[in-house]
Length: 549
Image (cartoon, rainbow, N blue to C red; front, side):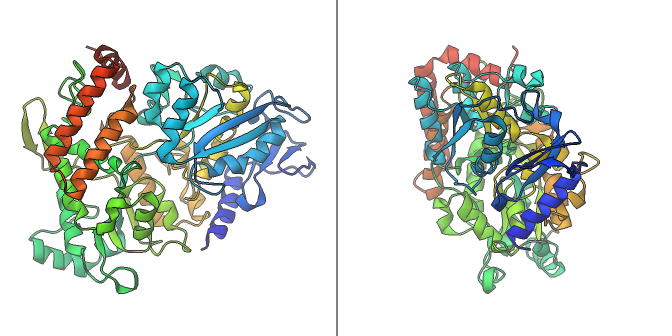
């Protein structure tokens, strides 16, 4: 099924899923029609093929036939530079005409590369320029945003009934935590990021490969792998076999490792099960980044070093060029059938359904990333082996979503625009296919009985049934795992990440050992903490992880 067919099917499926019909007598207009039965029909531009019929009250009390609550106002939204049909920025273009017609406001969309989004955001905020009314941020921006009082809380607006309706309630606790700060909501629901394992279920379930692997390694593997060590063995077994595109040698695993993009997140996700001691939050349990008593970096612990050594070994089963590959390049390699494993964000399985880009529709499996069978026990200061598979989750990535600038000229209009895209029917629709970069994470996007969606909602949108079942289970398991990677949200997060990123790149290229790279990172982090103020940083870190001493 081609991408256009998938979108058309998605439109039909999710229009029906609202359980609401369009009234025969509508007030016709290009993007908004007020219907005689108390509903309103909202339409994106034709090339996005999105139509939603919702109760009028879902739009909020400010909006109604003939009402233009923000007539003459103008808002500017800063977002990732992926263009009108790209990830994260695409929905802004799709819903802009609809919002302009509803509100009377004009929406400007300002684009910037992901590598410059943080810098451009804080240049505007710290200089007091106020160029942007709303910004699509990564959740790791929050430490700096909150410390500078740069964004506005949204709870009062959200609860007022005046604006398009959405709620934090469908979010698992792991995602809600990164949209709020000490119980107050700041982020408007949109994307849900985390990294899971993707694998070729057709190859892993092949009896001949199972038998050959057992003969070679001396044990039978599980599908999906039980732990990371088993995953690496499987990747090594498949690497180089003529199973790739047009019979080319296949890779065991493909990663996106480009420095100053999102390569560092492979390490931070992977290291969780090597470096975190399971248990209630304490100075040696449930912590990952810093010691919560004094801000001593933990990034160079023996567990973190072991994880980086593992990552280097896993990368050896993939193409040498991946050291400079961004997300899209690694995804395309996997989607073309050239690797057995990839662990990445929620875009991969939806993109696999697009047969104009993918050769693995109906062949892709998804699972929560397996844990290491050995981890560093910080309390006992020794490595511990565990035979039982563990579930260690993460919310790695941006979970890209909108916030309203405290410098906004039209804050309510900006909030309304963000909220229009957060409404349940819209959010559910956006999560069904890959072009828009909005990934699933909320109750109504998961399948029954853990969520509200039905398999037919997705198969009608062009999905292979088994692909989507495994995919949504993987993300539900990930976001609700008993052990979660703490999310770093403190002042200077980007600076800490930049130091880690550069050193990881040096380790992956072979110019530093894993231990050297992480020791150098820890030393730089100490300097950043001292410069920003250790007591101030400690207080922010404790607040960010919920530390109570």
